[in-house]
Length: 181
Ligand SMILES: Nc1ncnc2c1ncn2[C@@H]1O[C@H](COP(=O)(O)OP(=O)(O)OP(=O)(O)O)[C@@H](O)[C@H]1O
Ligand SMILES: [Mg+2]
Image 1 (tube, helix red, strand yellow):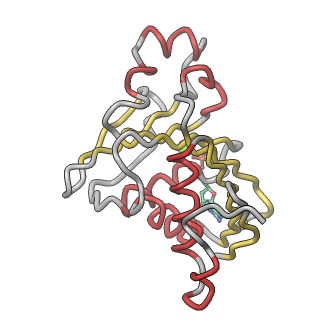
Image 2 (image 1 turned 90 degrees about the vertical axis):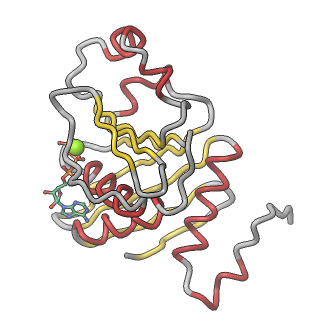
């Protein structure tokens, strides 16, 4: 995978093939904490589920993760007690209305790490602080992931991911304290 761009609150990574996307997800999964919300935006086949499979791997979850397209969510528990809630809003007809009825807003920002496919469909239900991920299909096996840290804790995770992906000699450049120049 290739890190294309890092800013104060974004990180852009290009992956070649689904295994690189899982690896990227795993790096993120290792950093996520209870209550973190990761909102995924990308077309059919963009790689949302592949990224979540990686996040699960990074959380030490061994049960196979498949898309909960016919139900709203799956919940997995990792060996350290962190839980991963995988939400897929694709089948909801009126996502915001049904999401509120099902109490999705309570799950998001609760104690789970929540990752949402088709997050743009339930935007009002997302907590203010979340990582927004834009996924673009660049070619058959190439995908571009842009992570936006929206809110303090989300920004902290995006920066931590950027540090984790940086080559060792460059890591000193990623100061954990935001600096103004
Ligand atoms: N770099 C890549 N990263 C992720 N998937 C890739 C990549 N290159 C090719 N693929 C293929 O793209 C597909 C991604 O499928 P995936 O189910 O993860 O997408 P999705 O965004 O969850 O789709 P859906 O909207 O149907 O849920 C898989 O068939 C995978 O093999
Ligand atoms: Mg999917």
